[in-house]
Amino acid sequence: MIDFAQVLNPTIAQAPAAGGGASIIPLAMMVGMVMMFYFVIVALPQRRMLKERQALLGSLKKNDRIITTGGIYGTVVSVDAEHDKVTVRICDEPAVRIQLNVRSVMQILREENKA
Image (tube, rainbow, N blue to C red):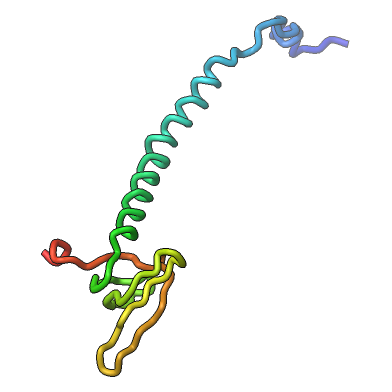
């Protein structure tokens, strides 16, 4: 029986040439570029923000005005660096104080932040 597809297009019946596989170099270059973009776009800014956050929490001291991650405004009464605790006064009359984990401090309100 005659297969008309093979008669009309004889290249269909031919097997692919051996050893003509794709090179791994373009794939390796693509993976390298993706890793480089990840490092530049994600890893470096994240590392910078982490250092800034640690500096912020390290500079926390008594009488600093702060905002917590929950949105509570208050004044630092004491800092216990050993146990990662901070005591915050949130109201003067009556005196209301709460203890928070140091990581709960979102921002320190200083004079340069008010401008």
